Image: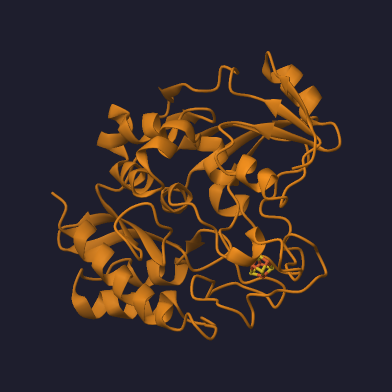
Length: 327
Ligand code: SF4
């Protein structure tokens, strides 16, 4: 582990000053960053501790939405009465992630910034990883790529984003609020993370020094929702495929649907084609299967993960059926 300096920020302004310096990284719970530093994958020169900033509140917004402070723990967010009652999809996704101990530590902002769990990214014995060393290649392309992407990947990187929370936030059309040297801006969750393209080292559209301050949820319009996570064991495992499904019904017909997938792409993957097909259709098996097929159109599996194409479709159908049965 490289040596680094540490400073605790007293307020947001000083955090931005310290965090804007070259080689600085913000330190929240550190549940991912510190592991990466210990493994020599990340080499921050300076850690700016933001855990004492007043960014942990969860509060209603005047328009009926909800603001989650960036430093709110995943447990506090998952168990907050307003999250549980108005956004059960988000609560379910949060509780499907990690372990209780990690959820007690990990923060909303840190959850968005966690890095892929591609084994080749973490194992510095493998020299080929474009995300770790741009231009070095991708060991996963010809390696054991069972957990990897089937949608939106590039020949530079086929990693997937590991967050469950972000998948639910994508379906709920959340907005990430950030502050930086040029002031405050809001980024739609679906534009927050990036596809790998030819810059897989960049996971998000944050610019250096920007600090996540909150995540805003719009007023809830979807009375029926469900988060389905398919994984190798029942807890403390990343998704092979996950589905965040939300429905607004008009009698037996779907007025509007939102579907986001996890475990299939470098970012939470909104299935907009499937959503469009479902609008106005009946909640019946044929419509759901047609939408599920549209969601994986253009999928490109690799040697060990072809099963994800079928699994994703079945998971979408199951998640929508389960959401539809919510009373
Ligand atoms: Fe690295 Fe991405 Fe390839 Fe994994 S998939 S080895 S993270 S470049």
